[in-house]
Image (cartoon, rainbow, N blue to C red):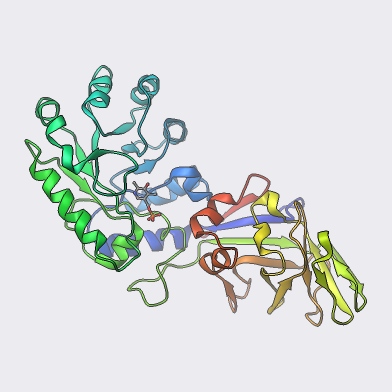
Length: 359
Ligand SMILES: *Cc1c(COP(=O)(O)O)cnc(C)c1O
């Protein structure tokens, strides 16, 4: 529900989040490990995790111990994997919060064994970011024989590209697994684009992120997500300006005729990209309107001439208009800002209240 002080906010549709996740689970054919790192890509990890309990996930994926601690504190009892390498002084807290580290060397494994036993083996098959190289499996074989991992995984670097790299990485992953003294129970490789492109997983779990949050892999792909995030603000001021008048910093937009300009209380400090100055669009009263001039820290101006817009009207800057007739999808908005949709979503920030709907 909107409250009196809500003037710019983010709506998160938990019903669509769940349906997108079920669509991925059906396509992959195995349980999900929802990736809820970075506060669930900016949507709120606690609310997202509790909503996703209904899809019976295998566990959850986060990036840091602090993120995992917050989930535990909110009552999540399933396994929580931490998908970045941990420093030795983080291990005690990892154990205390019953988090599962992802381990990429025998040194890391030995350090972890002083605390806990459960871990997943992180295998690098070409991303060169984290994990043990598929070429160096023998360096950990002896330690793994004594202390077998619960799971093992790799991460694809270009799952959205049709360049054959996913097959190469998958082959390396198989090679790496056969170099282990025994096969771990829980095996997982597929992020959203891999699930969408590959279909049924050959392994035991999938690790989706962005698709759950409403960003798909293009209009031709096998499954399409429902929109989850809607960024909205209310018009707080309106003014008529004359031909030749300019709008905002650096006067980059000049009125070609008499125009009605609306101000909304949303800016780059809320995560609406400054790169959308003179480029971004908004939806108000069934009309698509243009951002005029520079996006400022706290305010954006829009040309709302001939739309009938009034003070207090809601403008949608990402997502669907209230009547669902028009849609500004996050991928398109991000592309116009020269950003990835991941960057756009994770950038939507603190000052925006998150309103959760539709569970
Ligand atoms: C972020 C991440 C994912 C999810 O990727 P999406 O492209 O958002 O589906 C999966 N696995 C790992 C290791 C990740 O870091």
